[in-house]
Structures are given as C-alpha cells and as structure tokens.
Length: 239
Image 1 (cartoon, one colour):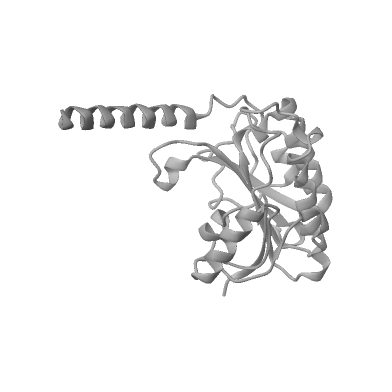
Image 2 (cartoon, rainbow, N blue to C red):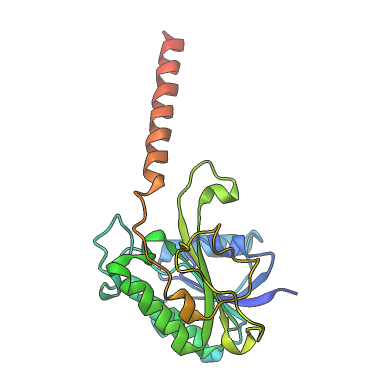
C-alpha cells in the first residue's frame, strides 16, 4: 500500500499528483483560498486523494496526525535569484522551519521538500547550512539533488532542488559512501535512488556554487518568439 502523507504548501496539488503512486494524502495545508478551491475540485473529480485542508501551517498540529511522510514545496520568494534573496530573514521561506515542526510532531519517517535551485547558495550558503543543521538536530539524514524539468520530458530545463530526508533510526547501518569534496550537488554525481543515505554531516560539506541564470527565462523568450512567428504567418495567410 501507499505511505500516508501530509501535503504542506499544497497549492494546486502538483506534488500530490506527482507522488500519487506511492503516497496517500491524508491532510493538505494551503493558505490561498483560490488554491484551496482547486484542491477541492480535484478531490471531487478523483484526481487527488480526498482529505481535510488546513489553511495555515503555523496552526497545523502535527501531533494529531499519524503520517509516514511530510511533503511540500516551501515558499521560494526569499530564496530565488529573481527576488531579493532575504533568505530565512524574510517572512515566507522561513516557513521551512514550520514544515520541520510538523514533521517532528507527527514523527514522519520521510520528509520530501522541493524548492528553487537558489536555496543552495542563498546567503552565501547560510540558508542551506541552516537547513542541514535543522535536519541534523531533528534526527534526519538526507540526500538532495538539482533536477531539471527536461529530466521528466519537458522541453525546457527549469532546475529545481529536491531533498529527501529519512529519519535516522530508519537509515541502514551499512557503511555510507564517501562524498568526494569536488562533487557538485547535481543529479549525475548524487543520484537519489542508487546509493544509501549519506550522513547529513558529509552533505553539509559539499561545495556551494552559484546557479546559472534561470533557464525558464530563455524558454519563455523562445515561446514568445514562436508565438510572434505564428501570428505573423496567420496575418500573411489572411492577407
């Protein structure tokens, strides 16, 4: 059967749809009223699991929920290279710590997080190291990777940060692979599925490099150019 899950920062249910084959969502949390309406519509048409929707992560009590997994894409506004990059001093991305609170309260076996690539180097790496420290103190080992949309078949790159944390008492006791100091945090060098969970302390020593300019911009310009060409062809045809 599927693992039970709390879907934080649910938005329109994208992560829920993507993980539906192995997660059964028993609780949603979404602050935006319009997004909650979409979630309810998707429940009604059977696209996602039917479950309660809480409206504020700050008041969600994880002690009342028995869930195997906490999953969510916490707010990226303070981490993205397209914003002011306030990091955890901002009002939105700091909600990462609320996600960790809920995970600890329900004693989640797994934590799955998604965000922009900029989480790696925001604040000169201080944000990521704060995340490492929080996960370590909460008793989780983790692995992470930068995965691009083209890896899932999309016609653009749109790099995204994904992290999977496993409660330390569930980590196999077998020896962990050593992360080479020169290995960058990318899919090829740190595959999610093919290696055991390294100790969290090793990952915290990985070098933090500046991400390139978001590829989504170049793809958007390509789409606009293509649309303009199609419009010109339509006008020529009508003439």
